[in-house]
Length: 506
Image 1 (cartoon, rainbow, N blue to C red):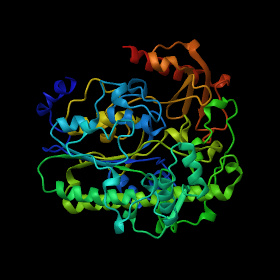
Image 2 (cartoon, rainbow, N blue to C red):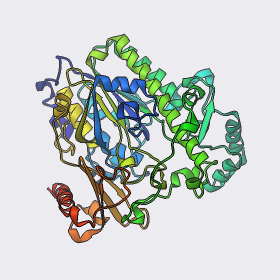
Image 3 (cartoon, rainbow, N blue to C red):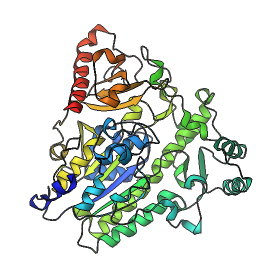
Image 4 (tube, one colour):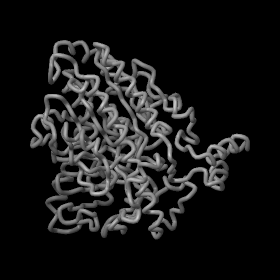
């Protein structure tokens, strides 16, 4: 009924630019942090993402709602915060936990758009969420790969030894997950990296790009607007990419993290133990902190995978221009969360720190600002409202984000004072950490977990507070929450947290 309410008045509202409904190309990147040349990286090679930034607005302060795949995607695609979707982990599903939720693709589908997608997209939903698509969603396993190859083990590797190990595993008859892990580990059949001299479409992201290009060419011959969603798997582990992308970098010159300790005054449960690395057969997380060679190999692999997906984006941008679609297509490039590369002696995501919660967001919308950066605070939960606004569709009342169109028109505009992320503690999981980030500070309030579940909050439910000053301490080495000089900052950001819970109850 909510969809009917909004869609009944769609035809009365003009799009934000032009006389036709704009097309949308949504590029979702898995584990991509703002380690790109356009964000100031001196190591990353990302000419095509940089090209997109030159055509649109780059958000310097974009933060995800929770630094884990399922929760961040369920939140962003529905425009609802994790406490509303009730997806706070890797296994929960959005529609089952939150019956009021509908995705942006579903909303645009009901508005007359052709909606299609492939890759890693609706993590946090069941079976690729069929309600979102006019065309059946294409799982990467259904795509043709270069040379008739079939990727081995989680649609990732192409090494012959790994293919053989997978066949042997199937013959082994092993049923228990841990036994399977041991079997594969003994053969080093789930390594953290793979560097083979193969074409781009020997791997999932390249095969998906070929499919996406075909869809764009097909849509260029149609009068119907489209919403095409492509979910790139890289630079998520394992770091597999064609050899030519590894060859772009000199591993010996790649620096490791500068600060690898815990912040003074921070609670131990704010840090994650690196369990995501445990599943890889060539990593011992107990010694990784001292193994600089392995650290450089992992960082090298991360950059190689970024360069690989950057090349895929370049081919998609070229196709938009060649087909004439570029003039009426909104492009969103979104990283689902950041990634620790050894800072605080941590790897992967799963925290409330800057390296996990900050991710790239670039929006190109014809008729809006281009080639500019904005320091306006932005959240992933804002993207649904923004696309509705750009397309001239009513913004559903239930959405919990704000339209960023004012920023796209004038990058100096501020639409909100803080961005809010959250992650539970890593000990007993009885607390929820709420991170409030403004232009200079991050406050993390560790609150009794019941507040997330009920929406009821009181100051006496706060067990710990962290506060980081990024002007004086960009590496988060000291929490200033007990420093009297920062008392007003703590009180101001705690007031924003109280406002968050007040809004939940209204």
